[in-house]
Image (cartoon, one colour):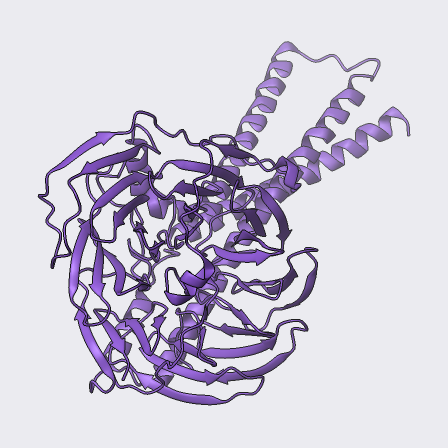
Length: 619
């Protein structure tokens, strides 16, 4: 190819690339303008439909219309986001081609032996014109790239208050150690005026600032140890199975060992309702139980509280207030109504109860309501609100803290609240909760997020394995049984992973959960969709065994107890099925009020948190 051919070819390529960049940039700007006119979080039309449903709760056509509207709105929004992100990459590619073509063009042009003589004013005019084109083109490209960035990250602005509040904190992980008077006997409410001497810890636990490496190898997963692992708390699996100490029960797997679980009740009429108690503040967290004590939490924009009830008679024993915590934001972050500031379920080891709120505040009380320690982990950058529940094992409080700023998992000492270990994760934001899995005699923590499902050593935080298979806004926690992890998310897929080999055994993309976690037990897998279809799969083969379409929205998670599977829908109706490879429904029972949290279980009792009240169901 001679010099003249190079000149012509590079000129044509530069022209095409320039037109391509201008067209993509214009489309990006138009797309950005369109997105800014639509709120991706709140829809006035959807709010109007929901309000109509409150006035007519039995209108099945209206329920179906709401589900279809919500599904279309979500798909349209995420499709628009995909278009913007793809357009940004296309614009970047076009700019690179344009720059390369221009370089070749001017290099070829410089080799022409005798350029025509032109007047100085003509040269100056050309230079000015060229500079003008470069400036205008660069401005359009910068605006388009900025628009694509703002569009892809638009949801982050929903939590702007949290970011402002977080910047005001002087130390994100300052631990507050509180020395208190000797424990009192349980009273109706522990007074907040007890003589308390608060002292700040002599050392602030520094937060790991290094970014996550792109490599997926286990050896390159950054782990920071700040303190030797805590001694065992003496809590055994047998003790856990006698209680219900975390979200979905022992090890957070949704498998309950209690017997004589009731199958018939009527909350509105009071049939088989042992007691009913009002919960002072709202929250979507589930009840947890240790011995005769039951714990829930609640919060609003002014106060965050932990409540302890006598599980036998429903009497409120004490209230613990999460206040005066170093680093806690003066103004709580903005959250959606279906998450709130108290979505994560508490956990207990029998010596203390631990709670986390949407502000990033973590607090511990002893079983009589004495405040032990409190700290702020940094306000979570979360556009819906933090919802990942806590779990404890071997003297450590385990926290999944995946936000818009990146993922991490950490272990805090149960007695002091200090960081035992912290591991950065190659993941994005997640609303799922951790699950403990016993593999070859050792326990590991299994987490799911976009894009990975991964296991971590409980003792030191080392990443043991990782499979890239998830996408989107991950809410459901994994199911675990027989060495197999089952993870799923709506608009993504469901996968079954052999935890020892990290092999994907099967996958499916038809029935997928949005918020409800997965139940895996004894060869079966149960999944509840947000639009009211409950399905059963074979654990090892992935074969769909049966489905039940009842049409009510579901956020609660299915639980196995006493040979049956219990599933509560958002309308407060508990559906009970035989644990079987065939569809066998045992019954349906109405609570009498809306409900979203997963129930807790004890021998002969079910504890259900409604929208306003706490119920004990039994004979």
